[in-house]
Image 1: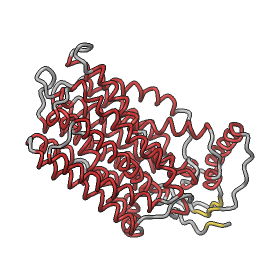
Image 2: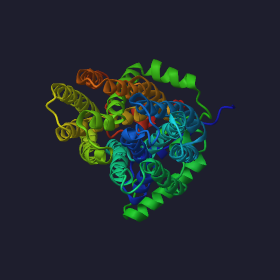
Image 3: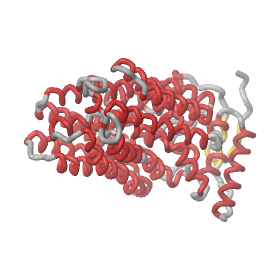
Image 4: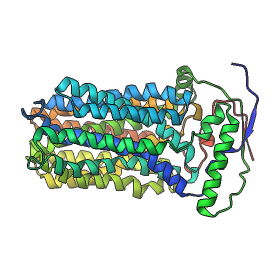
Length: 481
């Protein structure tokens, strides 16, 4: 394309200096729903795992139940890569409508599946939508939320994954109760809940704007200026506060497209330490969560004899602990800093998991004490896992943000997550506590190592503009003050 003229702008800093307002809450709710939907999906599959083993339903084996989680994650990895390229090329708004639509289609299809193969395929399609959502949504959120609260807001949104878990757990107590619904109907109804919620959100998202930052680096300055002005007017009316003009400016040369080669060169050549950091953080938390949660129902059912229609009672407190971890600890990521809090949450949760695994091996835990231990572990692990997504979404340039998120999500999930449900499903199927203990030790080690990597390679991104954390690729010459 022909070279576009140089642009001198303060749009990013105008967004960062905005006071918190109802408009920001709308952004958080309409975009953050992705995490709730993902939590709902994972919970549903985890809870109905024991139900799907019944000959009255699909008669799946422990391995097949575990593989449903793997199929979902494979779809999420592919969806993240595919849709991220489209997100960076065609915009955040267009893609977060398409990806949510893909999720709805996969979830509805899952409800009418008739055997293992069909359900695995439909779970893969559902994962495609969720994976695409991650890259489109995380980039959009970071680009619209003020820098001073970006860490806390990101962690709180990521932690809302557990609201979906709470909804799924409460739902299971009713729809999986054979006295209320036939056993082969209740698990199908669970999928329709997620689809219904997603459709309602699809309608709300129509009112969100395109990211002004994305418009800016693609040379669409007039559109970006118009949207920022509209946002400023809404925030001013909602808060009653006058807005000071920022003193910082960017000087850029817009580019229409950024290819995968630009992503690879930037991520792995220009920022190799950040690349190592992102891989460890994503892989560690992905293995831990996908290993434990996709097989949660199997563990409670096989080792503790908890009936399928009561598993939700044990997941409910576990989910509450996970939700409040990022919510209560999140502000410390903006005050004490990223490096301190990320390393602390990763290392501490890894150590607690290893200790709990040893108690499980000794056979001294009950369903109740096992749940209490997991609540404590994942209070810290949830904040750490949320910070992994925060890290990879803010430490790389704006033009490749969606693709960078996708690359790290895909590699991290592929290494640490996609194989975890199947592996743990096989370990549980063996019926030997020692085998499951080895799995716990592996998950604990990955978390602890990731925490150490954060100590050495972490980025002090707290309270800084995205453009100051990672210089955009569109030839930023300087940040003027």
